[in-house]
Length: 184
Ligand code: 2AM
Image 1 (tube, protein in one colour):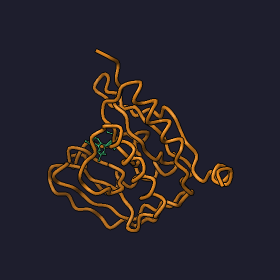
Image 2 (image 1 turned 90 degrees about the vertical axis):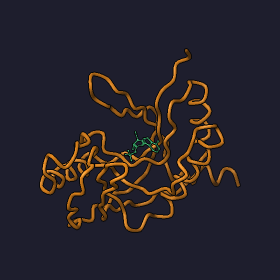
Image 3 (image 1 turned 30 degrees about the vertical axis):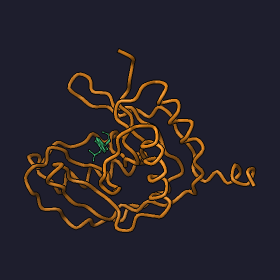
């Protein structure tokens, strides 16, 4: 069988934001609420690709490299739970246009390359707890953690020894105005 990897495009969270999230989560959710996502695995998915062959990975990476999108600021100021997917998440009340455009482009490229895309609209979120099948009280986020997003990454998801680890394989910089102006 040809080698394939489980891949997705995502935004990395800065380590200080990951630490703040973990502290906030520990203060507000009892351990039985769900399975906490490890700090280093906290991220915001832009497009899920599924199991992808080496050739398709190359093609998707080349297409991602052609995206020219401005940087934007992401503000985590919302939280909720989806009982159907059994997750508790953090999100943003007003997703910046740059975030939506970036996700739409990556999702469209993925669909054109034959990666099945969920028919659900993109709802930017950072999953905090998994297996959260019972409704839990979601405290109003007493925070407004904002950080600049200057790049996005292609991640591999590997499950080994009972743990999932997300590893960035490749990164692309946003706000490549030089390339834009070169094309003019
Ligand atoms: P989740 O956090 O909402 O579960 C790696 O698994 C990332 O890809 C996670 O952020 C996960 O979203 C997302 N993901 C996994 N399976 C997916 C699917 N079938 N459709 C869309 N996103 C998926």
